[in-house]
Image (spheres, rainbow, N blue to C red):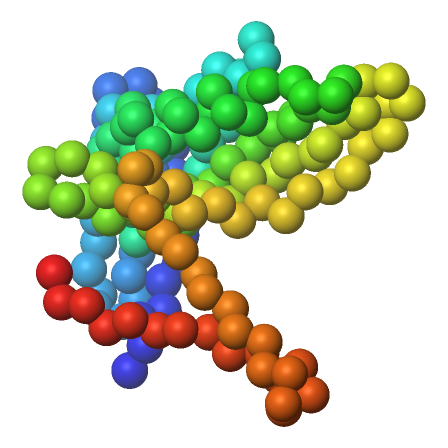
Length: 163
């Protein structure tokens, strides 16, 4: 049976329990401390603005912070800050959807960014698709074969390689 959860926030005062989560399926009660709640309110600086960061329930606050501190995330931010041909990317928010660890270090990070491409000359704004898979220096090649004998049907090559 799927686990249904209801989230109820209760304020008890500074230094005490800030919120609790009641898991109905397991009848398990867990209290979030003020420190945990503060850790769940993450952000980063982008073009001298603070960009709020949320994360999915499968990602802990500590894991989300590790993702923000990772080299793959910092590289992505630096590349997004670069203006090209008078166009720039504006970030409104970022959601961390998944983090894969390679031992003690962050391996892959999947994020969903609320972003817009802004033309600095015409001031035209265009929403960008925001799903990003941050993976660092891992190399990937997608080979696409177009078969002329089958009316341009498209095929891709899949290599099964144990690591």
